[in-house]
Length: 377
Image (cartoon, rainbow, N blue to C red; front, side):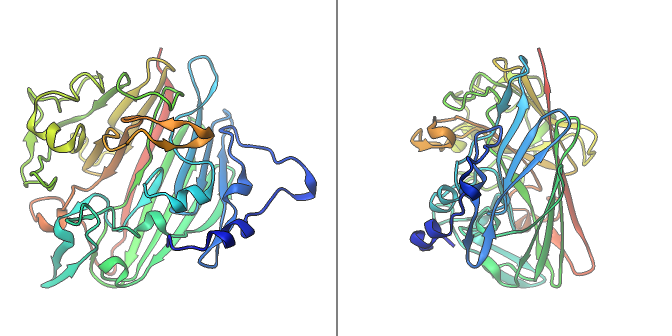
C-alpha cells in the first residue's frame, strides 16, 4: 500500500474550484488535502456535525478519525485527537492515528493460531515476533468504501479477501460512525464471513483532551472500571492469568493522574514502558455502563467510554518519540496522547480460556464503542 508513486499522488490532489478560497473545518483541515486516488480508489475527508456544533472528520483511508472538535469549559471549540493535515502524511508515515484496526486488534503471538485443526501464519510485524493490529497492511492501510448517510453518520465498508494477511475467509466488514446530539461518537462494527476466522476490531484514536497537543497527557486523569487485567510476559503476550489490580499501579478504579504511577517500580509497567495493557471490564458487555473515563483539568473536557466488549487497552503513547510533526505543524511529544481501545483480549485465538474471537459462517460479528464528551468543572 505504501509503495505509491507520490508524483501521481500530488497530481491527483484536487484543489478548490473556481479559484475560491477553500473553507477549512473547525480543526483547520482542508478537504482538498484528503482527495486523491490510491490503488484506483478515491480518498476523501468526511465531516460529521451535530446541532451543538461538535465536529468529527474522518478519512476513508484506514477509516481514520482525523479530528474531533468539542467545546471546552470556556465553550471554545477544541480538537481532542492527534493526526495529520493531509492524506499524503498518513500514507507516508507508519502509525495508527485514528485508524480502524483489523482483522485482529492487538497481538497474536508469533503471528500463529490454529482454528479447526488448521494452523495459520500471519505477518510478524511486532519486532519480528508477533502479529500486531492485523499486520503491516492491516485495515488501517486499506481504502474503505464510504457513504455519508446523513450530516451525522458515515458508513464504511470493506471486503477483506480470503487469505489477506494470512487470515481465512472472505470477511465483509461494515463500520458506522455516528455523531449524536449529546456529543458522543458512536462506532458500530459488523462483519460476516464465508469461512471460520478470528475477528477483533477496534479504533486506535490518540486522545489529548487538553486542546494543547504539544504537551504530554501525564496531568490528565484516567479511570477504568476494572478489577482485573491480563498480565503479559516479557514479549508482551498475555500469560492467560486474570490478575487483580489491587495494590498495583494498574488500579485505576478512581480518577487518577496518568503520570502519578506510570514510572513506578512495577514489573508490568517496565515491560510495557508505561501503561499498555488490557483491562478486564467489570461492565460485562453492558453498553450502558461506563467502561472508562478521562478528564483534562486544563480544558474541563471529559471523555466517557462505553462498549459491549469484555476488555479495553489503555495505552499512554510510550513509544511516541517526540519528533512527529502533526496537524498544524505541532510536534507531538513523548506520551502526548492516550488510547482507549475497546476489544476482546490480546492473543485470544491462542487462549481458549479467554472470550472467543472466532466468527463462523452464518454468524454476525457485532461490536460497539461510544466515546462521549462532556464538561467537568
